[in-house]
Amino acid sequence: MIGQRLHNSPLLVAGLGVLALVGALTLAGPVGASPAASPHARAQKGGGGSTQPPLVNGGGKLLQASTTYAIWWGPKTGFPSDARTGIEALLGGFGGSSYLGIAAQYMPGQVAPTSTFGGSLLDTTTPPPTHSPSTAAIAAEVGRVIGTPDRNALYLVYTSTMPHLNFCAWHAAAVINGVQTQIAYLPNTSGVSGCDPGQLFDPPPNPYSEGTRSLADSTAHEFMESVTDPVPVTGWADKNGQEIGDKCNFVYDTKLPVTLANGSQWQIQEEWSNSANNGAGACIDGD
Image (cartoon, rainbow, N blue to C red; front, side):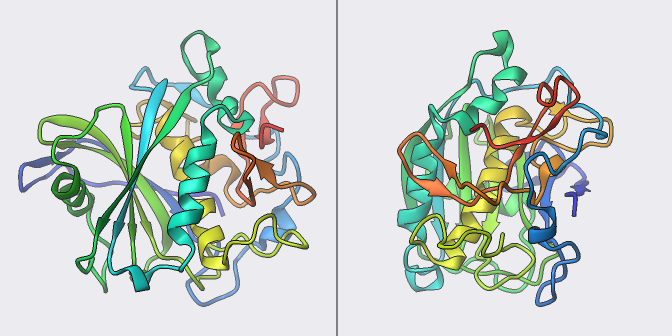
């Protein structure tokens, strides 16, 4: 199911001004139920189709060069045992990959963006367990852990909890200690059928657990949207507010996994390319 846009009113909480709309990766179906559209049924090269409108540049901020940080909020036992290792490998492989290279067409001079993994930070306090945290709450967590952030960084907040949500993850922009900052919220989606890309490969593309592979898929979605539309939806989005990941939500190449620059292989969704399919546009994975 194509991701929807969530509208948040501007607010000020603990000195954190929320600047923008939130880009959300929705579930393929309700939590605990079968996905409304099976990933298997949609998993084909270019499955997004060429009838979708193109992404249009709204003139907003872009991340030509960025650093990503993973913030693990919650007790270690609340995450899949291999989550940190897996996500660090994923984030360390984006820079220089053909997957990130899809975004070159959306950058000034059509130069491929660069990405560096800055490391993991730990907060073993308990995150909100029973409700969806607000943009301000996630921004406040980044402020507590980071202090003054880097305006060209992306701070991915992984929580050990998975409240009863109708989405898998989201990204947003907020002012943290006077700095406009890119943030993303990624709850623990272990066992959540609507967020799991499914067993599309036999054997799976890597040895990581289902929960970690699910987190990786959501991470790829939010990462690519944060690069091309850091302040939703002022960068690259279509006329319906769909971003580079929304237009290819739960669309995969079932034959080959995505291989990143560090050699790690992943079952992650394709991303929208305006230039693919002879300029008609399509979902591609860069390979």
